[in-house]
Image (tube, rainbow, N blue to C red; front, side, top):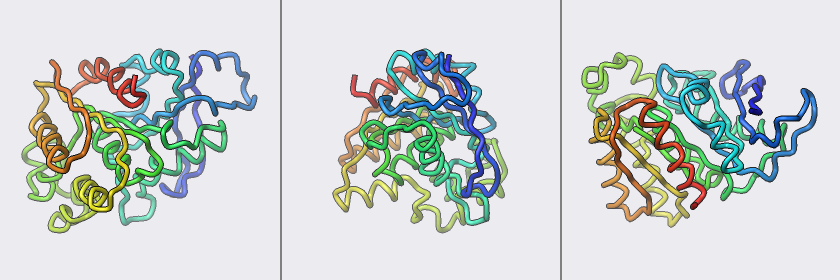
Length: 264
């Protein structure tokens, strides 16, 4: 398999950062230092969940085989526990990092496509939230996005119930990630705010695909977001399947999500 690690200085994070990039097997023979022209590939940025790393997709899913099967270049960033949102503090522009900076860096190094219709973003759990938010916020860049078991905890965050109800992190963490709770539901950090703005302005929506397991603790949130998109008249697909909030479900749903992006 052709998997490369790229280390560069990130202005968004104000430090050196690293991402991994997966190429189809046709690129296996390329030697270190040899120029890569991947302009003929479609591009997927794939975001990991809370307390995870980009390696998890390589170790726990068939993403390498899927990159080969669908002629994809897959970019795997490490987003730490950021929810892929821009924070006010220096070095915390994680949304811009995955929505612009990494893509620009990879395009420069590997001549990746700059066509919206060939550029996608997806993820699971926190990464599902990140993919939804990033795909909406940078809708001129991404032709589609997908979220699996997406951590759509907007209302819990705003009501300051996220910490006790899900037991994953304390309230100080959620305040740092999402901003003041009394302002959150009117800020661009809530994907629903972005959707309403795009609908009001007649913006061309990306392809949207959502999936959640029937045993997932995020099931009600996923169903609520599906209902919200329907109310807004936004075309999308939403599927449920057997499984929970883990790679057992995500590894099965990854290929259908990619196919939804590629319309195959």
